Length: 550
Ligand SMILES: [Fe+2]
Ligand SMILES: [Fe+2]
Image 1 (cartoon, protein in one colour):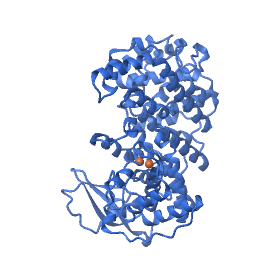
Image 2: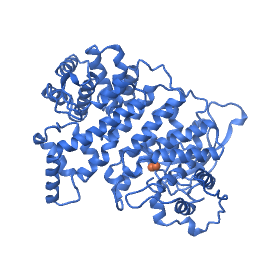
Image 3: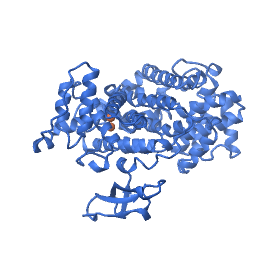
Image 4: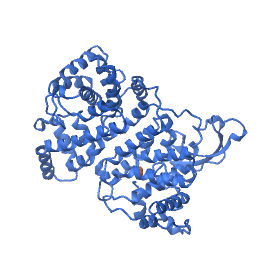
């Protein structure tokens, strides 16, 4: 970011008092570079918030700022940051995975868990919900409404005993199930959910646990960590899922994860006392009695909850988590970082049948465009990683919206429009991902200012950002959606041509067409003859809306 003393505003800012967003062109010195050559024309976005004008960092103004920074990163830094995305899918209180990690590691230390198991436990606690997106669609189908509150409720209620559902859960079901239908339909659906509860649990929890364990395996976290995630929902009395394991058949790490998860879910929403009270009530049925005694002992001695309140500073909580990582000095190789990005892209894509390969498809297209445009190897790598994770904020969007076969209402659109900003806020927690975060957050911006969430314009958007916008549009059009089938290449080109060059970058689009043609063995097309008219600028509403939520 340009520091204020070096910035000279050259253009006047018109309408700043009335407009939400205005643009200024500034001349400034890039931090970390000395000499006369530092004078650069840069574009920045200035945002009027009512209490003053704020500078917003865009990809065009960002791209050179951190080039000299240390890009090394440890596994715990990246996983602890991306764990916020898993909290979103589960509708858990922000920071749930981090607090669970602190609680579980304290219980493990008190229970004298052997040192060779602590690293497996650490990553199992952070990633225990990594399989969570895989059953979101099914949950949405079962309730006929928003899946996320129900996913959160599952952790409060003993779903192995549906006949003992609490008043709060019945109320939640009443508000969540078929929200747009009449009372009779709701009662019928809730009754059906009760009757088929065990079958649903088997399917959904099994899917989530096995998928989570597979992802940990792919990430090289080891068998112990994978088993902990696979057995997270087993109960001490043998009534849990997916394998009805009993007492010490359940891996110790899974038992610790279950207790830690419970403690945070209850304490962050209903208070510490309620958390301990329900933990005791479920001792010997849901939870390992010995671990319950350990947790209660820590609680009594005031040694359990430091940095574990949602009101504590998020930075302090994360720092405490990072301090517990014995391997924090081990820096990841580039290939390992790619593997983590691919794994989280899988988590995002698994949320809906319609997007089951979307992030990977955007990454492939973006890689092809970036290579065809002769970007340097490190910029191609940046583009590919940003493409893999561009929609990570979509984990916050309900499947009742993602899978909706119809027009979204205003409230649903509001939820959709938040997802690029959420992608950015998650990714910028990883130091070396900060530029990637800005690029990912711009994937729905358009060159003419008609995109979202910031309504940025051409000078704000870097080549990397433009590549991802084009790749995202192409991937979305080539996939099935609830309201239409996948389009073929000629149809896609026809639609996207209407958006070039006013909304999408012409060079990126040409590179895409060349790359896809070559990869598919099609005749190579000539570079576009851009003879657009005003009519083309006003692409039809249908064309815009088909791309509005890619
Ligand atoms: Fe997308
Ligand atoms: Fe998106």
